[in-house]
Length: 460
Image (cartoon, rainbow, N blue to C red; front, side):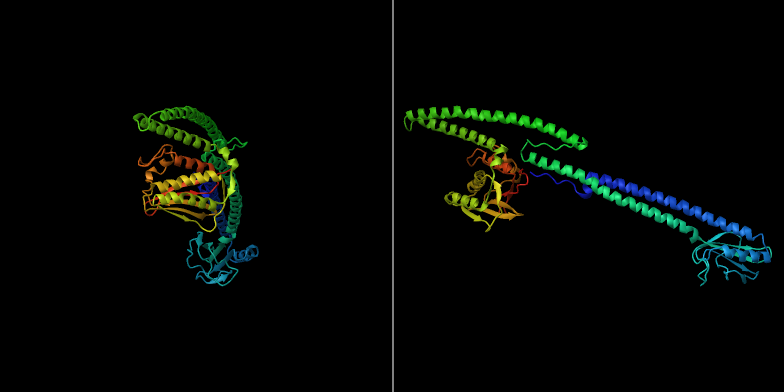
């Protein structure tokens, strides 16, 4: 059984929390930047209008030649393309100043108005974009137009905006780098926990979840799980010890009982009712002994110390030996046995005798449950660099509801065939010992398909 892979990218909780924090930080920074930009823009706009109003009040004190001299002098200190004026007579004809025409949409009411297009002129020294403008009548009956380009003061807001943008960018870049680095460490720890958990799931209860020196929440959870594993391992060893002791202790008196029954049988007259009853009793005794041997065999296989004896092996000779061994049995049952293997197969590591026993159980079951005239196929293939061994038959198959239960001890799908219900339990123990996966399915014709995936990711 394999565990799901740790969450990656945006699926992990650490990534989501960091992304949420980054989003809130960026959103708040944007709001702050927007408020600051609005406040600065509003302040500079009021400042521009106030400055233009002061110029209007200043020039309103002059008339005649004094006004002409004051306007001429102001051009020395005004910035070109920013401040401009135009002096017109009562018939709106230009008298002096760079502005030669009164803006069409400027009311002549002495109030400051914001114009979308300031001066319609080809003169590059005149404000072209939006501006604040005012038209006022002088004391001598002339008309004075004053304009101030908004872009001059709002250049400051652009500088502030650029500064805020770069500040936000320089904040986001370290934030993304920090998000990437901060989410990697929890994922590394979770992968280490997953590796240990997979070994535990495979049946090796000696493994424990790793602990760090930080003593954080993950360490607290790992410590709790390790304490549970300690207790579970102790209880399982106790139960296993009791079962093994019972099976081992009963095997000796059963052997003696069978020997005594055999002696009595030899003394009875052949064909007598006593001899027939003794035959039945000896058969039941053999059945009990076979069951105890099966239980002890499973207990032996569940000892993961046997992995130390694993060796590299080639699957093709093993499959050929199985085929040759079971071909006579298949022919006796009028079942066609087919060996379907590629020219080459990847090697694997394991106990050859145990793998032969497991595949022999699968193959013998298929032959036993396949009716005469049927077909059993022993097939192998290369599955992503690992061997895939399958046994397919044209028998009744295994119902989907029973595909997990068939590996339990003493479970049998029906009582029509002899057996103790321990064969597939032994197969499951061998498969778990090797870290393989055994999948039960169905063929196209309805028969059983048992697939042994020989990936050894769980072997340490």
